[in-house]
Image (cartoon, rainbow, N blue to C red; front, top):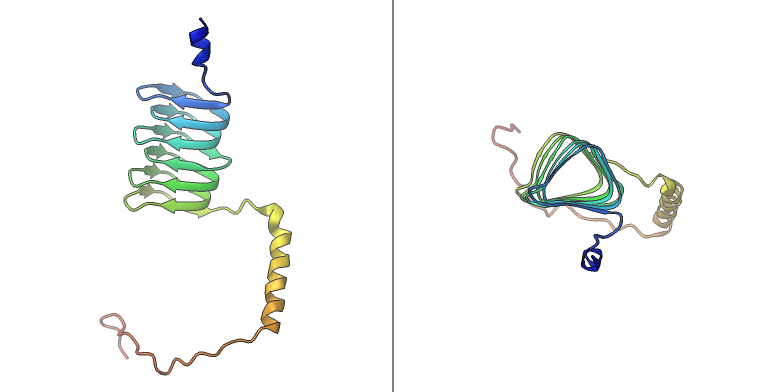
Length: 158
């Protein structure tokens, strides 16, 4: 019996093994790792969908997600979303930061969402600082007269 207790899974994490299908809404405060199939809406802190993993449902991730497998419906990631070359997303994607490897397949809309509303006041302060630094800095002038222009598209008349 103590050997079974030694193999206790980590708290606040969900691992869905290959060949396993879970149906229903899922709420996990930490990390979800999907090697199998999850059918239903999911809310998690972090998400990893392996190359064999499939999620069919609305996904909400508080921090970061990395997708190697397939995702169907909507995915909303507040932090970084990484779509690997083997990934396939069918549905709308909303994220803070998006990284897409060559070969990733997306069918649907993509939108960037700025979840840093608490930092809006600091952004205004930074913009004011930038404006004041432009006022005090010396701007350089560039001479474009010596540049060679590339030809325009075929059929563009001049």
